[in-house]
Length: 484
Image (cartoon, rainbow, N blue to C red; front, side, top):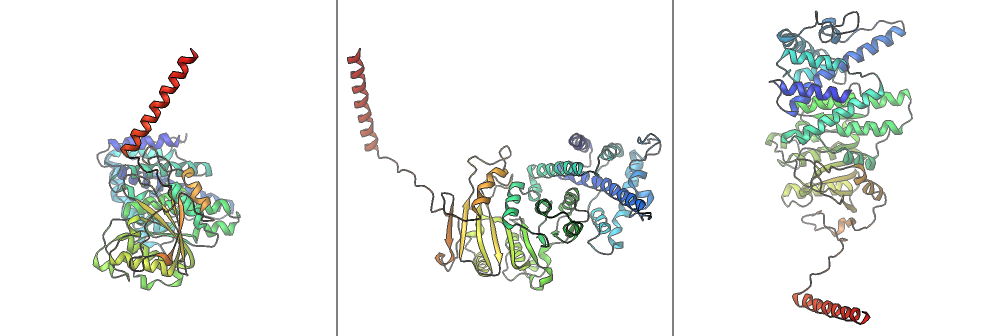
């Protein structure tokens, strides 16, 4: 049912003149889903308070609650079309009353870690782009049929939402920055292995894929106590995101995965001076796929010791600085980071190798990131001691990667298993830091264990082989004649 509902909402948005891309579709679906979810959350809390004999103070004032403006019901439990706003009246109410009211929560909230602050942030950053009130009325009624209460329903909704994020990435343009293939994320999490009580961070959170998958990983493995669940909900996952739409998508994705008030801050991570990062600001595990190819202004570069316009290089410095001693990181980056000869790249490699143990480099095949068209590697490192040796693994799924042949969990299984022992194979090898060129510290992917191909034969050798075959054929024919 949910899948058809999502498709129907997309079909209506396609017809509306205000939403004209996959990015718009998911942005508009997100704010409607958020308000529907918020209504269920409030109702659940009110019911729990009632069972305890207590009264519940609603976050949202009555006139702005979902059952009042979005889905008023009659005695039969059906939408009351006599009282439900529609057409121009609905758009006028949403744009001029509902939106300003919800955006105002940002100023009223006690701190950014509350659901109230998230409400204010979301409705400060997004705008209603659905221009037809009749289209919006249809969408609201479809969303009203969705159920957020059971674990099964939430799981299905989160899966469908992830599919929408993936489709947005496939649509090209700047959508691709929001989607990292989930099998790759899961492999990165298995290697870093976050534990209960540790803090997990993504400073380029996008759609929050890393944090959602880390939540699932830890939830499945932990002892299900009230204390552990509270820790996982409130004090484990942290993120920062600069882009408005990505911020909202990340919040919604985490909510659908079961985290009530995600600790995601809407800020340009690179605007923070890394010299001011203190121990209390550091994390045990960092998982990220920072944007590459971007260029940062001179004033932003001043926040870093190694100055460069390359966004991903600045993020890498931020991540190293944000790791606790003994902390683990897995970071996706363009493979050119390993070999670029400019001063910034060399300095950054030196900083990484001297301050961290770069124990693994995973070389990803082209086509891993749909629409991105770049070759990437994943850097796995631990902070606190220098690198002595690095294990490389060259992923080869045995097929061309693309939209119809995306990465899957089976593709990653061998890497995850071999990574524990770091053996030498046809696909993997070890590189000692002492063997590096001390000037360039070139870490390029150069597999020394690739089987050598047989050398091409010379024309003379080919002719000789042909003559031998001719002679053998003649002899065979002669033998057949004698038998006859």
